[in-house]
Length: 267
Image (cartoon, rainbow, N blue to C red; front, side, top):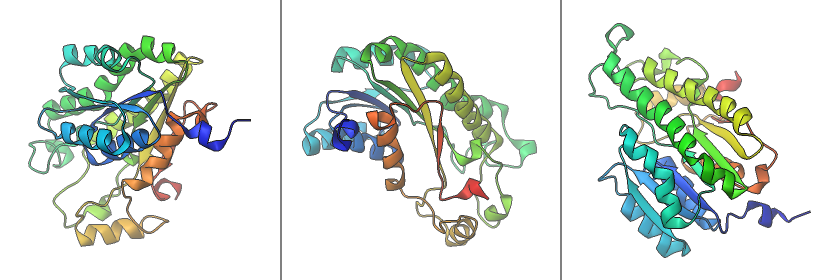
């Protein structure tokens, strides 16, 4: 039996992390670099992905590359897996982390359901569901060739349960239908791909709960009271699941959606 350290190692592998300059994406990319993987950081132009890649190379001595791609650009998305192979020599791990979450000021997003925009709905599904499917589809040859191909989709509790609107009282943000629908679709796509791509490629998902980032105090208190572990998440809370699903520690795991939500969905 191999040692735990051997099973957890990602040395010699290449990981592609979408949204890799964001909070969760950067934490996952750094974890993979620490475990020895080369890392391709995909994010929008101007996202600061170059700074993330430079940090990973300087800190962990791994090969990094940056792909400035708009995930709504189908032609560009189709080329991504081959670009990673051309630059890094292979592709072993694909993390679909990038997501369209909108902004508080976006028209037809965090508004009453009667006013939510169909154009915004389409944009959310394009980024959160269609682009991940296209990336997996185009990455299949490389992931099969890896012999340890792993796909990890980053979902949301709102792809599993409906929002508890009581916690959103007196705040100017919320979670629209398009976000929940796209994340729910991503989780079902995870299961569908897991049985379809087996035994060559494993496909799993991580389902985060709410993350603490300058959250209004009233909302934070209500969220904590609704959560068995009585706190919101930090980025650090997700790296264990990310490491587990990417490595041989989970070699016999596929089709799973791991809840990392402090028990939010256990009620």
